Structure formats: structure tokens, C-alpha cells
Amino acid sequence: MFTVLSRFGRRRKPISLLTTAISYSTATVGKSSKLYTEYSFQPPESLKPQQNPAPPESTRKRSKPRYRPPSSLDREGVEPLKSELPFDFRFSYTESSPYVRPIGLREPKYSPFGPGRLDRVWTGVCAPAVDPKVGSIETEKELEEKREETKEMIQGEPLSNAERKALVDGCQRHRTKRQINLGRDGLTHNMLNDIHNHWKHAEAVRIKCMGVPTVDMNNVCIQLEDKTFGKIIHRQGGLLVLYRGRYYRPKKRPVIPLMLWKPQEPVYPRLIKTTIDGLSVEETKQMRKRGLAVPPLTKLGKNGYYGSLGHMVRDAFLTEELVRIDCKGLEKSDRKKIGCKLRDLVPCILVTFDKEQIVVWRGEDYKPAMDEFSLLDKEIFNDTHHDMDQPVDENDIADDLEVPQDFDSGDSGEE
Image (cartoon, rainbow, N blue to C red):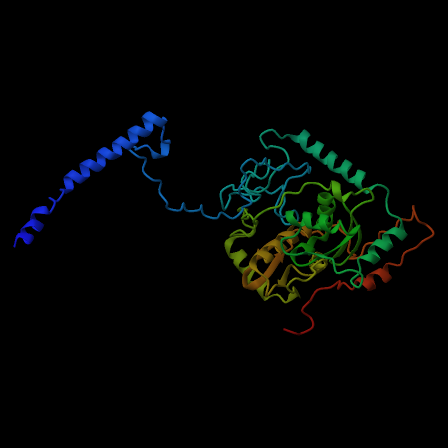
């Protein structure tokens, strides 16, 4: 009994938790103060307690900017292109005339070359070489002189017969497949760039003309030589061979800005009025009925060669008052362009375009016009002054080129 009481009496009193925490804190303070006083210890900045620590930055990944594909319309920091070509830029040089003024526009005056890409102003029809606000008759004459000087400087001396024959022989079908097709839009602006690209590889290029522009082939040849400063050395039917010139340098080719889209055609005066000049309303109706009942002079095939159409209409007017041309399969715009060209070439009066036909009237006081354009589809380009001893046989070259000279006249009976 005494032993048990002695054990309970010897037990130590438990130390409270508060006393333990105070003693631990005093020991810590003492240690820290001892380091500072005896060893002059300075803790680094990273270990010093901060009252208001900076909030951690957001660990969210920043989103990448959206991909923006390169665009030709993005012209930031790029100066507009400047071209020294001495003529107005048009979409088509053969199917539009600078002397016919439109009566309206179908769209705003947005330049087809793109915004800020060309230093010329777009008027809705063309991009003139001279600002229309400053231009005058003298500046137009200067541009014509500049075109002539540039062409003479590039062409140099005329080709001899042997040189011309060698160039034409190199453009034959069995020699090369390089060819430029000239269709219903005629000689377009971007086609000038194609011609210069062909001239990089060869001195001459073959051009095949089809459809509406072939009604007036002389105009096609004039515009080609005027806009490219080249020379046509062979012509048979709708096939042309365009020579670049003796002193042409591909590295010094002119700057030709490209059109990015086809502009809308402006509004021109109507080709056919309600009444024909000099006739009453009833007489006009009767003439249109008679014109549609006349036997067709010929039938035009799609993408054919119409070079002799003007001569056929002229010859028909010697005996007939009305002439009808069958245009089944052709678009309405093509019929209007053909009629407009016939009106100026023959000349004649347009009666109607109904039922896919072209009906023309010779007029009351008709007088046959003199031959203003050659009847031959094949022109001779022999130069007798430079090469008298080397004659050239045009028939040999024509047989090799294999170009049809006629179009479907509709007399074969095949529908």
C-alpha cells in the first residue's frame, strides 16, 4: 500500500501546451538574435518575410492571333505601280472604241487593277495615260509620237524574206504548241502580258483569232501592233504571226499591271431604235417582218471565222434590199457586236436582232462603197527591196499552218 502511494506521489506534473509553445518561441528568438549579435548574419531577401507578397501571375496560356493569309490587296507600305506605256488602259482594245461615249455606268468607279495598285485614275471605262483633268490635244499628239518612236526603236530594220520565212516556219503547228487564242472579248489588257511572256522564249508568237473580233481583222492587226509595238509578219484567215522586233529585250519589257477582275461594261446608246430613221412606226414593223422572212445569206458558227462577212453583205446589197444572217447558237451580246461592226464597215442600218437573227437594211439611197479593206484573207509580206534574190512561196507556208479560211455558210444542209 505504501509502495503504490509512493509511485503516485513521484509522478511529475504535465507541462501545458501553452508553456511549451512559449518556451519554443523564446528559444527561437534567442537563437536568431544570437546569430545576428555574435556572427552578424544577414538573411537574404528571399527569406525575409513579406507583408504584402505580389500575387502570382496568371498561368493561363495566351491565345495565338488568328492566321491571316497573304492578300494581294494588302498594300501597306507599298507604293502604287507606275507604267510608262503611252496609251489608255482598257479591258478590251478591239471591242471598245474611245470615240463612243457611254451614257451611264453599271457599277461604281472601282479600279479593276485593285485599290492603290496603279497610279492611274479609273474613269469607269479606262485608265487614261494622262489625267483627264489636265489632258489636252497636245498631250494626245505627244503620246502618238512617243508610240511611233518606241515602235521604230524596237523594230529596227525590216526583215528580209528569208528571215521572215524562218520565223513563220518556226510558228507552225508541228514546230511548236505555243499559241495565244483571241476570243469574243478581243484583245484584252491582260493578253498583252501573255504576249510578252511568249516573247521570252521565241521571237514570234502565233495568235489564233476566233469569233466576233474576226469581223474586222484589220482593226485586230492595228491594235496588236499599236499596243505591243510588234509587227505582224504573216496573216492568213484568223491566224496571225506577231514578231517582237530586232532590238526587243525581254529584261527591258514594259511594266504591264494586270487587271484582277473584268469590269462591267458601261451603258451605251441603243443600237436599234423604236423606229428607223425616215420611216414610220408601221413601216418599221413591216420591214422587220419582211426581214425575218428573207432567206438567210449565211449561217454563223460558234467561234468561227467571219472575216468575209462584210464583203458578203456588200455584194448582197447590190441585188437585195434586206439581208438576214442566221446566228442560232450565238449569244445575244455577240449578235449585237457583229451588227455594230457591220453597221460601220458596210455601212448599213440595223433592223432587228429577234429570233437569233441579224437583219440589216441597205437604206433608201444606197451607193456601193469603195473597197476600204482588202478582200484577201492572206496578205503578202515579201520585202523585194531587201531580198530580191530569195523569193518566198506563200502557198508553202499557208499549207503548213493549216488554217481554215472560211466559216460555215449554212449551205451544206446540216443542222
